[in-house]
Image 1 (cartoon, rainbow over the protein chains, first blue to last red):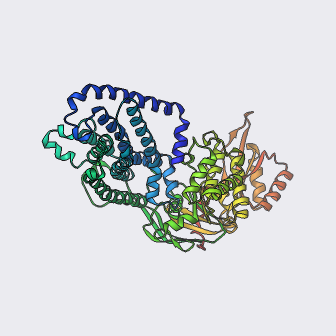
Image 2: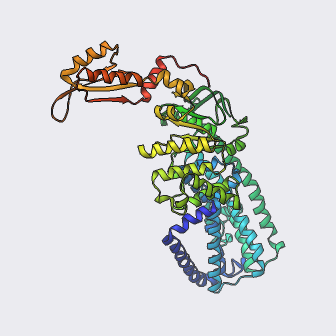
Image 3: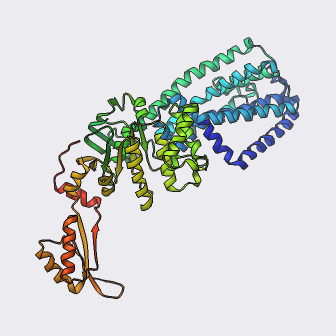
Length: 260
Length: 338
């Protein structure tokens, strides 16, 4: 299914070229903003690398991946219902986890490639990376992405059940950008709302990622954040899969797998 | 091979805002299949005949595990479609007419490779199956063309190829000729009979609203109407019982009394008589419809021509679904042999 998505995506050549151009256009302003605000922000981000440009680059790289994790599945299900491909896939013996992986795989892989390019562009523009922490950094990014996949599972269930995701993925991503320390550290958020940031998975993910990649922190120093992320993944994935299975059962009962 | 015992299915009726705001727990439901019982034997070409809304697609989608039955028991090769759905999916293939379910920006081969993978086929086996399926539907030469460039007939054949990939034992064909022109439809029927039924020895269930298609192609036919099985049996028996042949005879309006007299002499009672209608030259014409078998029709036309009638046309009236349903209902339904 990932291959089919790739085949379809590459057939729209102009769109593919433009997606790389926009990537470039997105990183350059980040460079100027990062450099301009670095003196102001350095103190408040001292525990997350101390370099505001690097801080921003990692935030900008991870957000589209998180958005893909939350938004791809409901979009794919809605499209599959509209075209009839979902029904044909449900007629095959493929299991639900494999179906979910197939429907989301391409977007996540494409998002990961774009995130890697953003980081490489950042490095080219002077961002310092602790390459020794790359493997751990990738694990943290994977866990962060997986932490948002359940949002997609629940949104996918909503699409199956009500034909709308009720803007759930967008809400999750906007809330995460606002509260999760993407463009600024969570320490600058007003105290009364900061407690909410403590339950947003991207807060843990970005904090750990920045420590590992920008500060060369050891595994032990991020074990708390990684553990919280892993726990969040475990609990919410079970809930998300339950929601999706229930919705599938409902549409099979109602006979609406092909109705849009 | 396929067994349905007292299959019931209702769908909830969509509630309006007013009803929704009343927050009533009770929901109206629309019965779609009512106590349907039938058996399809291995290797059989079985027709499911009925008008739109008869429940044909719901029955097929139940067999394909896309819909859960409300009551009754549905098994495919002894496997329950609810409890053993995954195993049933390995045996069954549903072929609809929805061309959009193909990936139009990918080639035919790429489309089939995807579904081969979804059916657990890998590597050389998958490639061989894809090539074989394309060969079967005579699309081997166009395997590398984008599906978006295919004609409707080619897409329909590609849908069949997709269904054949995992070598299903049962093919569910849901109105496969609906979007085809008459010539393509005829070729497609020949293909179904010769290739799928005779060569591949698939058990085929064909849903159609075309009685001639069902009675012509299928070994046995079931007539479904408003979710109920009205009749089922061997196609030739149903044809003999309900498929009474009729002929349309056209003569100049002035010769109508002579025609009626001639028919009366032969003991033929016209079922319909149309009002006079003018031809291109303004001459008024009359048309009567008479019941007759193939042999009788030959002697009737000979007698009419010998009687110096100016017979303008004498043609067979196709069997319509409405006629068939009317006859089945009037006849109280055939004994259900399924």
